[in-house]
Image (cartoon, rainbow, N blue to C red; front, side, top):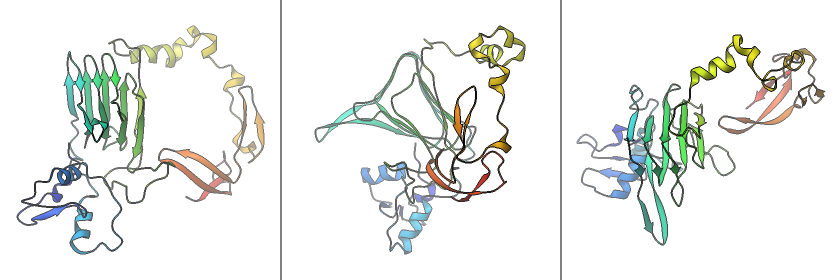
Length: 290
C-alpha cells in the first residue's frame, strides 16, 4: 500500500516527478525507483537542494495525507488458513517479505501468520491496526518485527517478538529522533500497543472484566489481594512534596525529582530543565525548556 503522495506521480503536466533522490519520468520502469516511491521514507535533503529537486522534496511530505478521510481499514484475511510471506535468498542472506501500510490494516488468519516484516500506519487517534492469528504469529528469519507510525492502537494476538510504536518520526539506536524524518500529516502521539495470548481461538470478554473488576457493586466479592486498604489508597498531600526528599508510604518509597531530570516520553527520551514554581503542585516545578 503506497505511502506516496499522488503529486509525486509523473503526469503530462509534470513529466518528471518522484523524489529528489529518485526522480521518475513517464518512460522510466526501474523497479528500485518505484519501490522507493511506494515506501516514501523521509530522508535528509541535500544541503544545496534547490529548484526542481526542492519542489519534489516538498511534494512527498504534505501537511494532510491523501487518505486522511478514509476511515475504512484495509483487510488481509485467511479465514481457515495462514498468511505467509515469501523468504528469498540474496547475496548469501535470507530476506523476509515486508508489508508497508498507508492506513490502519487488519491481518487475520485462522491458523498462522508467518515470515512478514510489518511497517504499519495509523492516521487518526481512533485508528486500530490488528495482527491476529488462531495459532501463531512467527517472524521471518531476518526481521519479522512490527513498527507502527501514528496514533491510535496496535493489537497483536498472540504477541510477536519485536513491537515498536514511533509516532510520526524515526528514532536512531540511541532512541533519539532522526532529523527530517517527521511525517507532517501524522500527529506526534504514539500508538498504544496491546498484546494478548492464551485465548485458544476465543475472544476476551470485556463485559465480564468490567463487571468483575470495575463495578463497585462487586468489590465485596474480590479477593483481598486485589483490594487496597484505606491507608494504601490514601495519596500524599501534593503541597507537602519537596524536590529531592524521600517519602515513605505503606506501598513503598518515592522521591520527588530534583531540578534536572531525565524521563520517558511517548516519543523517546527527553531531558527537561525544571525551575521552582508553584505552577504544578505535585512537582512544584514547570518545564523551562524542552
